[in-house]
Amino acid sequence: MTEKYNNTRSNVYATRSDFCHIYVEQMNGLFLLSLLLTADRQKAEQCFLFGFEDSLKNNYVFKERAHSWARRSITLRAIRLLCPRPGEATESNESRLSPLIGNVPAEVHAYPDFARIVALNSFERFVFVMSILEKYSAQECSLLLGCFRRDVIDAQATAVRRLASVVIATQTQPENDFVSFAGAK
View 1 (spheres, rainbow, N blue to C red):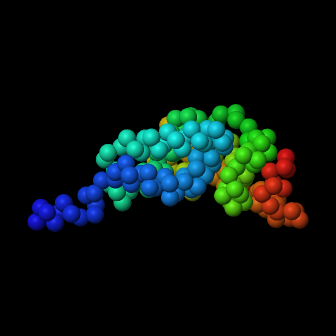
View 2 (view 1 turned 120 degrees about the vertical axis):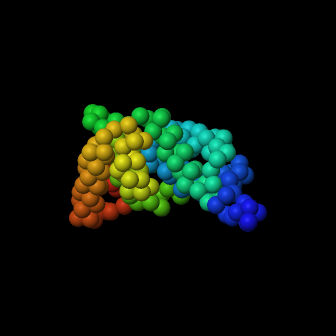
View 3 (view 1 turned 180 degrees about the horizontal axis):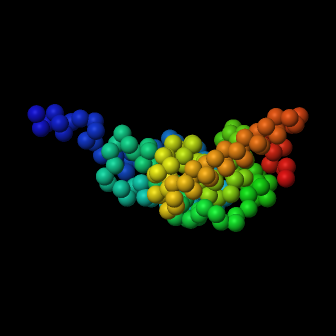
């Protein structure tokens, strides 16, 4: 009975090799997550590399959860790196879009909403990426970001409202692509 229990899939821990495989196989998606959170290529690279190191150091992650752990490591590193806070008077990142576009890997251009998400202010961007794209609960977002649940809910609503207004505005214009949005002020 014990041997059968030890051989079940849920008892197998992820190895360094498993994490290396995940980071190689999912490199574009993991880097995109870093880039969406940080809105800066250099910080995204730093976040990606430190997330990789954190994943390799962890010996107690079940193999079936290793992919989620890799994404979570990147998210936690981005939070530590940028410390986004609600109510900060941070302007949107639209002014940083033009230089960022030239440095974005070709794979990222496949995501036309990338520029819209990066244009959000830091806290709204983190909440949007974590709650909508990564499917963290409002409670988990508030714990990780060190804020109230109400702040997360408000930032999520504001981010969705801002993104929806941009989508509606670009649908009424003849040019509705990544580059035309990035150049708009």
